[in-house]
Amino acid sequence: QSVLTQPPSASGTPGQRVTISCSGSSSNIGVNYVYWYQQLPGTAPKLLIHRNDQRPSGVPDRFSGSKSGTSGSLAISGLRSEDEADYYCVAWDDSLNGWMFGGGTKLTVL
Amino acid sequence: QVQLQQSGPGLVKPSQTLSLTCAISGDSVSSNRAAWNWIRQSPSRGLEWLGRTYYRSRWYNDYAVSVKSRITINPDTSKNQFSLQLNSVTPEDTAVYYCARGPCSGGSCYSMDVWGKGTTVTVSS
View 1 (spheres, rainbow over the protein chains, first blue to last red):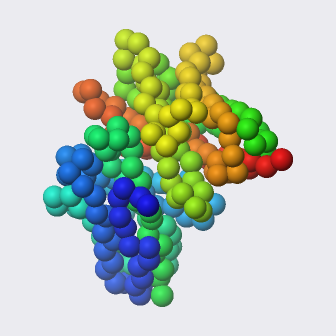
View 2 (tube, each protein chain N blue to C red):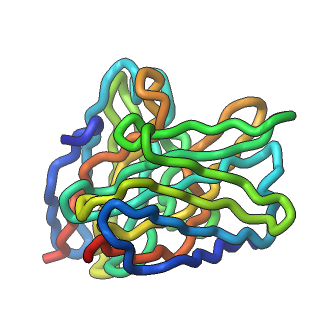
């Protein structure tokens, strides 16, 4: 059971907008940043969004992040087939004194 | 740019010690602007942060509660690398193990931005 809760799956058709949620608590997302990673099969996770809503250099602006209270959200607009991947949220937990990962959301582009 | 090169055995026997090394290029293990992390991934446990080491006038370590009694992360400044040791392994420790850098600034550290390629470790006799 992950400290951060994500839906196990999400889907959309090319061009659509999809959102993935990440629910935490007052000891993690409530007081710290949320981060998002994209993981393609057989590769290491890639940082997609840092500090709630910031995109690292090279990440398309189709990807956006937000945070409200104890939840974070990743939105992908203009969905493409290459966006089909697993997506993970991460936050530092002050009570557990460590980085916590969500269980991951498998995105399918129909 | 920063690169992390992992090395270590892919097969470990139950009850023995899992040992992996992560060599850093393009940054320093002693940097006060980074923390050096180990993360693992398995189908049953998903992505799991194991711990980190970082230098701020002296060396610090943080470890995940789930492995705290069995884990050691050590820096090696002479080789600019850091290592993971996990004792008394069981088949439950079978996973892909990643090393990763967490950037730090102004006393705060942020989530991992550079990752190694991963090492598949199987615990089996």
